[in-house]
Image 1 (spheres, rainbow, N blue to C red):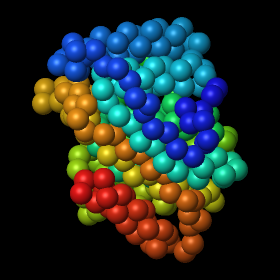
Image 2 (image 1 turned 120 degrees about the vertical axis):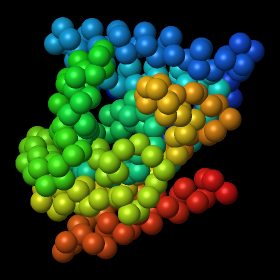
Image 3 (image 1 turned 90 degrees about the horizontal axis):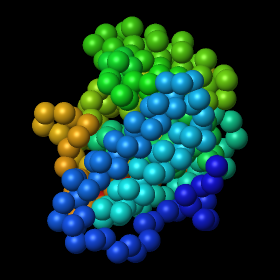
Length: 258
């Protein structure tokens, strides 16, 4: 599969002509395309034909569909992914559905990945077939002690097989709050003996919905940002590295919003 970045360092949306209808009705224009992509890949996964190549392709289709309704992407730090041999733990803030569906198109050309997800997502209509096929680590989000045990046990298994883990330590998709940013990803990386790559993102171009959280408004006036930091080797309990990630996320959010 091909990286979305020509130089393997950055990706920026190229100037596109957006039709008048899509400018006025970005959500109405985007969601039919999005659902057709999801349904198509869900059927493939349900038949047992899931592949990382297919996952990458469907994710890239969503990224380009967002761009065609006017959403602009800026992605930095891809060289920090490419330069690391072997699996890593990606740890970042979590804001919207956008990163969940777009990150595979960004990372998969460099590393196989899966997520730590809520157990309920494995029973989500239509999406469940795709989510199950990605072999995620599922947690309850209600029992922190049990969730930690599951992440450490199953996360180590995924990492040992060469699959990198994406972890959003916040319990839900919301504005970044360092107090809610747990060290579960640090603990996994330390236990597995793999490095961490910090991830900062700003993705409110795809809002969280009021009735259905995954299906909020598409707001092209808001640029979508992703930035991957340099790898961190965990030392001791990882307290320093945890703070480095928090500072990395906060510094980028401050830069992008001022």
